[in-house]
Image (tube, rainbow, N blue to C red; front, top):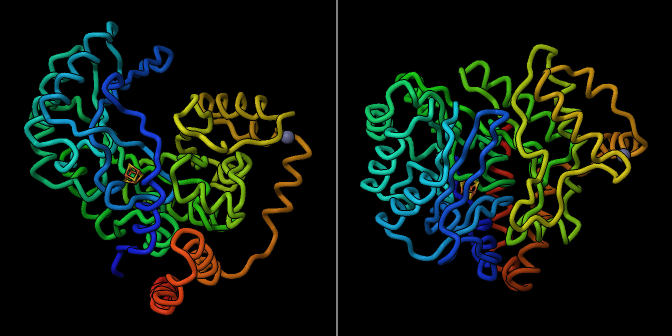
Length: 375
Ligand code: SF4
Ligand SMILES: [Zn+2]
């Protein structure tokens, strides 16, 4: 399957023309220290994820910055490091996208940043990077600098379905690429942590749960540590547009809870971003009703600590029952739903003419790829 989704790319670029920008002359790095988990993260300014700049993922606005040279990045990392006084078990270093993407972080800057980190007293290092930025050469280089202190790398898998990753996310990677990259990581004794999306745009709640479960299973068969990321609606994204046009369901925390409960009892993946941490440009958080929201967040904190699903089973609120009703609601099938959404989006973003001109070809591609997906 050709994984490039030109339609989403064009929509995303159009929507992001008016985006608000987080990084500027005064915001050049950002630090999060969490002593309770012995974790610290340092994010530094770049021009942003190169996939985003060419029309990126439907739900993501990791934001962009002005032109930023490799030397500037090194300087921002130095400034950030000088502010962090403690040493931590895990230290995450992150640009606004992918650490190993030379289009975002030039190779020379990457090496110098890694060398700066390796001289600190933190006990292990990690970063996020797109699957398609991983090759043997860069991993070998990172390992030669960090040695055993580089023991895990976060990669965006989202789902194990090429069709869903192409048409609901525009991830721009295939399962075959994912498989190749994780083999490289294993070869260098690095655990791949696979980010999986709970609440994929355009899927029903149940479809989302089903593909998450299948992806988690795939992860355990392929020695990938799964990490479940909750979808929120962010400004400047296609998801916001789809959400505002009433073309997708509300993000909801019961989806995450139902997913965890539908997994085998001994499977307890890490869960991330169920809290919003005052995230930049949040429009609609995955939440529950105001009556139980904080109770649910506390329960998820406890679940994270004790990995005890009974904590989640005990949660009780009317909104949980209402959500369960929505879970069982039938919708039209996935390719029809995608065609309908794309058609509405194209009219909204580009005007009536677009779908008249390109609609048939896009529809054909969706149905053809769907038949490949379902065999
Ligand atoms: S999810 Fe990752 S790859 Fe996709 S646009 Fe955001 S930063 Fe880029
Ligand atoms: Zn409630």
